[in-house]
Length: 402
Ligand code: SF4
Image (tube, rainbow, N blue to C red; front, side, top):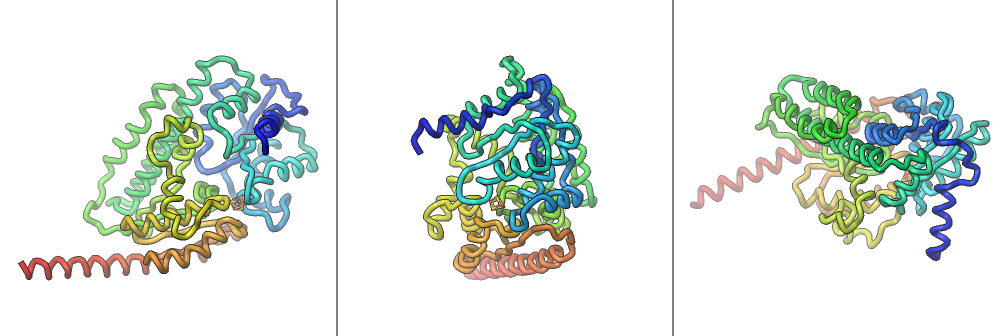
């Protein structure tokens, strides 16, 4: 596609011809996904626009999504569509859509949702953020289209608060994953996380937001933990949406933490945000994606859409960095992750790392997942104990020789 055509398409997406809503009348909504609301609310409301936040994903939302979607479409689409319907019912008239062109159904989300919502009789304006092409300039253009805000201070305030809130909540999550399996008083880590979630949400000044991350770290440090406890470390990886949304993944991080496992989720919203929005000349370190491409090379020569190359690359990386196991999660019928699942069995064999794939869809029961996770963690713990005994024996042999 030549550059002019690309530019023209982008312009059409941002400045849609049927856009008739004045900025002062706009009521904006977006799909729910993990904690992205914290950053988006700060940003959009700083630009002076009203917001409707869809409620967190629940069985009720899923039912709405399933009812209005075609059968074979993936779980994230169903929940996104339900979020839009619920927001439109609450008065939203402008929908922010996230889309990427390319090799899986994500490229069709916008058109499908738009068509379905129009068929259902809703009237709305749609603003598309192209996740593959958007850099800071395009993102600002899209926000300007929605808000018509010309005040640079408001943009500074919104982006500064949004970024700092995203970094603070991701830090709180990382610390929660580390602390939960080691805490001496059950529930301390969860309580601390919930407290900070509320504070981060309610903080409404640039300076206050800048201080959040440091305060979160200090507070988690106060939780008494068993530092000597042997805690297996498991990488959680797979499709972006199910990784970030606790409803979609049935709170797998909590389940693992309660089983005494430290989770390392491989995708965090703030990392992704930084990488996508920061101009490349400012992004000095190797990005997560670049690392994945490097480690996946033996098994994949190029990215094929979705998070396939990240899934494979992270699993190889895990095997070389002392990680005890990998849990790969994906929505039912997710095309890129079906490919990953097949490659992962070879990676697991050749790199000697336990891998389990879990598929999530509309079944709301948790018990089946719990049993599979428990069995997998038993295996991981046994493997860890075995290698610990082996290492100790080796050490004793060495000492005897001296
Ligand atoms: S990555 Fe998978 S779940 Fe996500 S849109 Fe593509 S096919 Fe659907």
